[in-house]
Amino acid sequence: MNKQVDVAQADLKNAKSELKSTQSKVDAKKKDLASLTGQVQKAKSAPKTLAAGRYEVGKDIPEGRYKATPVGEGSNFVTFDGEGVPDVNTILGVDGEASYTFMVYDGYTIQTEATVKLTPID
Image 1: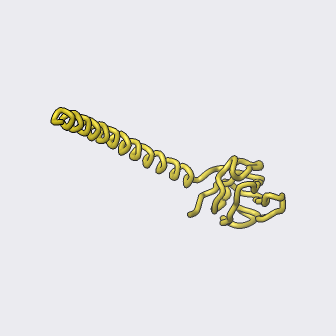
Image 2 (image 1 turned 90 degrees about the vertical axis):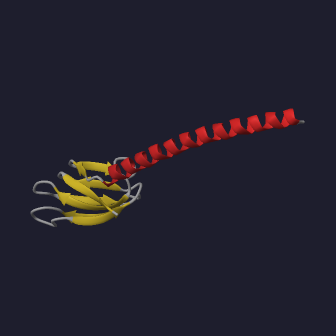
Image 3 (image 1 turned 90 degrees about the horizontal axis):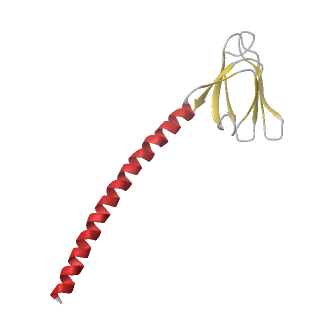
């Protein structure tokens, strides 16, 4: 019986050692994940510059709230909802607004006739 207890205690000691090693690996992976999550959040919140053209929300840029600022003289700036209906239609720049804050969702389209900087707003 003592031999069985000794074997069980040895097995328990090995299991505890393995658990401690595994927990250390999990903790290291959690730190890696937190770092990567922070990098993704930082990347999402970095301003994006869009050249003249059409952009699909959810594909070209993430959905969210943005402040549009013209780069240069500016021009017409339009967003369309998922059904193609204009949601925002404004002039940015010299002949219009200095900036414009708006919301877009997956499936929306942004059309700009000149370069514009989009700054995410939380």
